[in-house]
Length: 273
Ligand SMILES: [Zn+2]
Image (cartoon, rainbow, N blue to C red):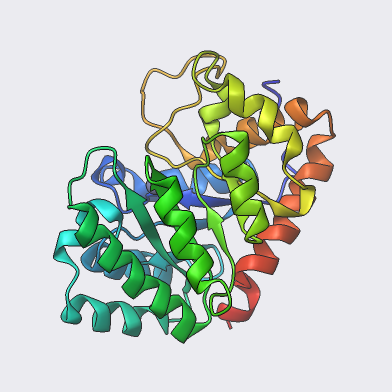
C-alpha cells in the first residue's frame, strides 16, 4: 500500500506543528504534506502560549492551517483566570475551530486529578460559551471523562475523541455522546494496535476522522522505513489506506467521507472567511 494517490484531499485533524521537532523545517513539512494531498491541517494547542503560537502559524497559511486552543491535561496546574481569558480571546480568532486539547490523563498525573478536573470543567464551559467543538484527550480516566461529558452534553457542540486507542465499551460511550473518533497510525502497530484495528470497522462512517498526531506515533509499517522516528503529516495517506483496508472499503471513498465529517464538525470554510 505504498502508492500515494495525488488526488486525495485530506485533513490531518491532529498535528502538533508548533512542536520543536519541526523547528528546523516546518515549512517543508507543511509543503510535503500538501504534495501528497494533505491539504488541510488542524494544529493542536496544548497550553495558552502554544495556542497563541498555533494561531500565528495558521495566519501564515490561510485556508490550509487551522488550530485548536486549549490546555492539555498535563498542564492543567497552570490553568488560571488569566489563561481562561487568553483562551477565550483565541477561541474568537477565525483560525481556531475547536477547544482543546482538553480532557483527563490520570496515567502520569503531571497535574493532579483535581487540577485536571477543574481545567476540563473550565474548558467545557468555554466550549459551551463559544459554540466550538471539543478536541478531547483521555488516558486512564475514561469513567470520569465520560461522566463530565454527560453533564455538559446539552450545552456542548460536539467534539472528537482524538487519538482513540480505547476498548469497544469506551468507543460506544463516545459514540453515544454523538462524538467523533480520531484514528491515528496507532492501528499500524502490529502489537499494540490490533484491538483498535478490529474496532475501526465498527465506527460509523460519518463519525470517523483521521490524524497523524505528528511528530508522535510514527506508523510502524511504513515502507520503506523512514530514517527518522519523527512522524509527519505527509504520512496521513498511509493511515487512510490502512483504515480503508481494515474497514474493507475503498480509500478514495473513505477520504471523501472523512473530509465531509471534518467539515461538518469543524466548519473550516466558514471560519477562514
Ligand atoms: Zn492527546
